[in-house]
Amino acid sequence: MDSATIEKYKRTLGNYLPTNAVDPIFDFIQQHSVHLHITRERHTKLGDYRWPQQRHPFHEISVNGNLNPYFFLWVMLHEMAHLNTREHHGSNVQPHGHEWQEAYRQLILQYMSCFPEELHPWMRRYCSRIPLSHPVENKIEELLRHHNPNYNPADDLTLNQLAPGTAFRITAKPHIHFRAIEKRRTRWICQNLDDGKQYLVAGTAQVIPD
Image (cartoon, one colour):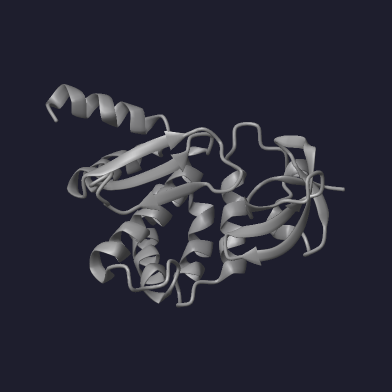
């Protein structure tokens, strides 16, 4: 990239990331030749990583563009950890196994100063041991949502806080009725009560219990 293109790319990143994260994230993207896609809101996931294949011979990371800058960085680090795990261990490891958890832990520690200070104790606790703690992760993501521009504590209920079997609606799509069936790490298997089909829904999705 020439200098003008680099500055334009960094300005775009600055619309989605904390200011002090722009340069190191840009350096990571360049170092690993990452194609970064900033997508519309997806209810099934917040981000995604795809390793190089014949049809797309490059690392590909996507992150939902509706996230606040701290949450965007949190998800970006999750996907960067997948890339690092793939490069260091190949494909013969579990997607969120010990190797990925260690890669994610290292990135969180590296980028901790880019997050608000009130999150630091929780992040240090989260990174204190492997396996990583799902309850602590849920607490961090709850605190990250507090930085949403239109945050309202009354609306701060997520799928992760519901018990299996609970009927609910996703706040962003209140016309669709679901039932929570089973949690699969960061996502839940949910049944659409209108058509009977099952879907994966992000545990961080804001919900309204029925």
